[in-house]
Image 1 (cartoon, rainbow, N blue to C red):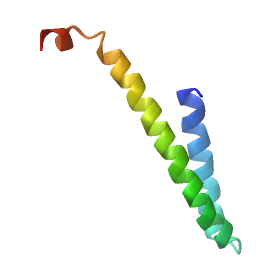
Image 2: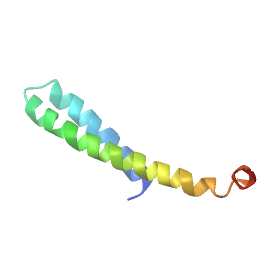
Image 3: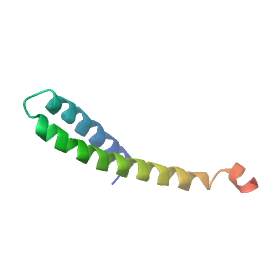
Image 4: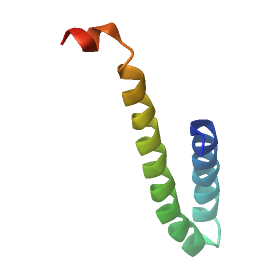
Length: 64
């Protein structure tokens, strides 16, 4: 998955979760919070992996 797609899907899931928590479907919103955590974890792992790959191209890292 691309980083942009993960970011926007996470944002959409969070908005949907907040909307569901303030309606009569709060039980579904609470369940969706678990999905938000999983997608958020995937997003952070993918983002940090991209950052680590980009660090290898910095000249400062080679001098350390």
